[in-house]
Amino acid sequence: MDYFEYRDGIYHGEDVSLETIAATVGTPCYVYSRATLERHWHAFNDSFGDYPHTVYYAVKANSNLAVLNVLARLGSSFDIVSIGELERVIHAGGRSEQVVFSGVGKRLDEIERAVDVGIQCFNIETVAELDRIESTAAAKSCVVNIAVRINPDVDAGTHPYISTGLKENKFGLTADDAIDVYRRAAASAHLNVSGVACHIGSQLTRMEPFEDAFARVLEFVGRLEGEGISLDHIDFGGGLGVRYRDETPPHPTEYTERLVACLKQHGVSLPVTIEPGRVIAANAGVFLTRIEYLKDTQARNFAIVDGAMNDLIRPALYQSWQEVVSVRKADKSVPQRTYDIVGPVCESADFLGKERELAVRAGDLLAIRSAGAYGHVMSSNYNARPKPAEVMVDKDRFYVIRERETIEQMVAGEHLLPE
Ligand SMILES: *Cc1c(COP(=O)(O)O)cnc(C)c1O
Image 1 (tube, protein in one colour):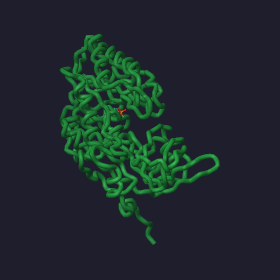
Image 2 (cartoon, helix red, strand yellow):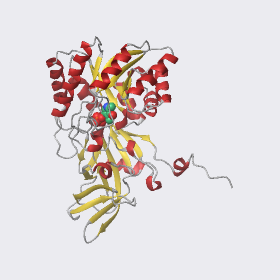
Image 3 (cartoon, helix red, strand yellow):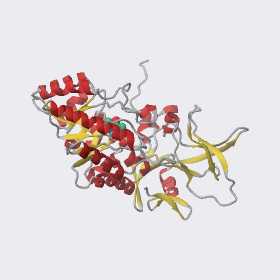
Image 4 (cartoon, helix red, strand yellow):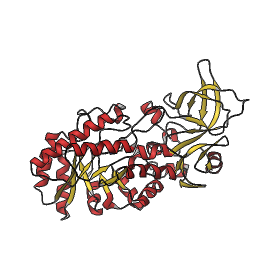
């Protein structure tokens, strides 16, 4: 559930009309709802009841400082995949001891910085990564916590670009490779074997792949115990899907119940960590854009808007469907027609929605729903378009949490060759 809805025919985020935001901040822009972010985070955190757990928000879904700060105030921990994300968490008031570092390609400088600030745990994905982390810890005379990300070889049943748990994917290690890493880590004076991790993909809408993955990870935990290696937590990653259109993903409560049931079945009572991103942020945001022109051709009707694939790439990249709503419900005089909603970028991939029934005129505002995750974070300057602003609504107030990029900012750091 989210806090975007019509009130008296005008689409609102909480108590603020999106028309007011567009008039003040301009378009295109992203609009997030604080209450929705908080509600989604609590839905996960509360679903565990008494079971020992920690929620690590996956920063890559939406890394705006204000978003991170709202979650940090709830006590959230954070899952990062780069040093840039670590610095963002620190800037936003998050605590480095509550950070887990995932990702297949951690550079030496990233590992050094993460060791310096004292993060909670490194999730290792490559055998050689262990050596880098160990030698960094040795050089700094400290002990760091590690977990190994297992690739359970299960099909997440999601878009191939966001499936990560198949053996042909670059992510994680097979159980056999992982055992070697654990043996070496257990023998090291500078590494502490802390956990085991897994993350099989994103936008999962069924429980079965999760349960297959849980079972394989838990079998692996048994194998480690057989080796005399004990853990202090199991990290089940993120990936729970959201409703964009008519998907019926499990509710966080169902997800957690099945997860805890799996643990019991395997006789495991270790603390659990999860890394949700999309399920917290996606439906906590919309992308607000204005129609510049309506263009009718023989084949199609186009609504040409001021937002584009550089601002919101999910439709172009994953052929994903996001609901398009007109911010003001039209009166009867405006005909309802079928439109493709397209931006000004010079590519036919530049669409935000196809074949949508809308009653709109040029100048009207559209809200593209479910844009809070993998939206602004994936934006670019393609076609030399400055990045859009971001706004956070909090009850009847709203705050610009990222200013619209200026042309000066966009070209800053570029240099001409000398004469
Ligand atoms: C992307 C990612 C997540 C978050 O995935 P969502 O689908 O957004 O919940 C969690 N953990 C890892 C390791 C990731 O790469």
